[in-house]
Image (cartoon, rainbow, N blue to C red; front, side):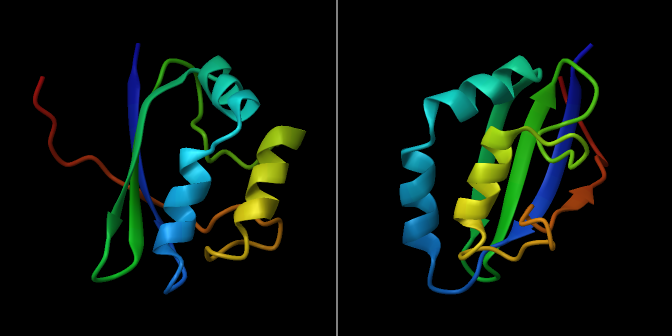
Length: 106
């Protein structure tokens, strides 16, 4: 069964190009690890008026890519690298706010 997750994150002002640049060069091992965790169809959108990032992903396993329990070293390195351009928690994970699904059309 595929589960859908949506959440928002917060980009610091002035870092839009840097955020896009870093994601254009996402590490192959990070992409592979995300897929192995059952995450697929993962997209991130940017609202330029608010600097809010909206993320959507579908997961075939329990959890999603923003789970902060038992974080692997690859994810932690990515979070550490992104911490200077995003609002983050004390462990450098991005501040995320889950968004409830109100409508879906197959």
